Length: 390
Image (cartoon, rainbow, N blue to C red; front, side, top):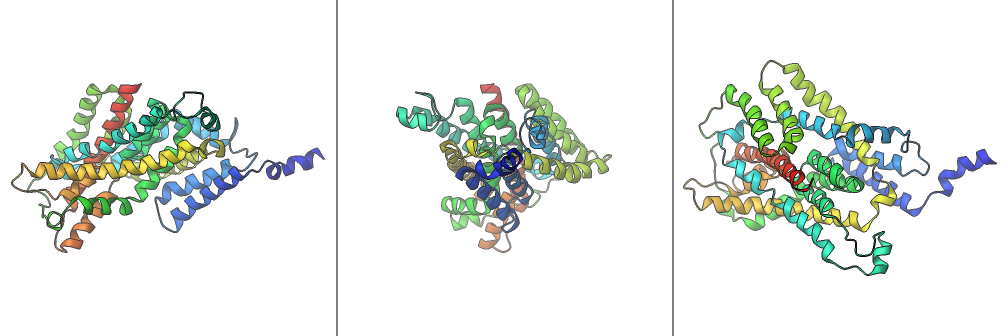
């Protein structure tokens, strides 16, 4: 009878919350396969959520392999750092170096991080009745998010999954599943989120502005090699806590640009990136346990994360329009929206929008420059938040 009971534990301990989480896992897998929304991450995350929410699952727990992976790769930030090495090896900084002004778009588009951080923190100003606080599992007078947790929610606005995971692991480990799902889901939905915002803030004439493809500038190999080294040193001196993030990103780029490590560059871009992404995804999925994920805070994180992406795009476009007030040769303001770190998806979207207005207009390279600047800007923004609140 004891053995029979143990076999039936999966059924007797099954709750509606488990059912909801299994459904969420299946939906994530569907979006990855059918809609091709960030399949390399949403599929492992979805399957990890299924493994975690089977009652009595030994995939999690003291000796569960998912818990082992979590402790070995997430708690010590190893997986996000390795992802940054792979991303750095994929990035070509030459479009940014040809037109350095695009660096400011990468900074301006990080506005959404701080706006959403303030939104998350402002929930603490709401005095919840004691009955509701008890229902939400909060102590009397306790807010929905602490300041550090609000910062981890705000970093979703970076549109940079590894940075979101890195900051979330330090400041809001119990919400890391929701933060990661929000970050990667909205990155996948950038083609749906950005165009309406950009069109609302620009005129047809502005969207038709032409820009030089290469600005008549040739970036030397020496500059491409020195760039990651100089950025690492300068950023590290200004914000030492940024060294793991910016250092790993720039190390990957140095491998790419040095010209003597082609095999390692290809390995970082392919084998390393693919393997770590696989392990990262299924491990993040293991944090989506029903009792932690099905909370009011999770739904707030998803809502605030969406607004963060909208704010990022809007502020980037508005900043580009502001810069145009002082330039004789105007910038297509749409590329300001590429200052988010959704590389290279955002740049491709802007190119499609430009060609829809004028089939002969090519703004892809300037857009890529702003997109690359967003990658650097998101890392710096994450480091600033870590430095201010650690």
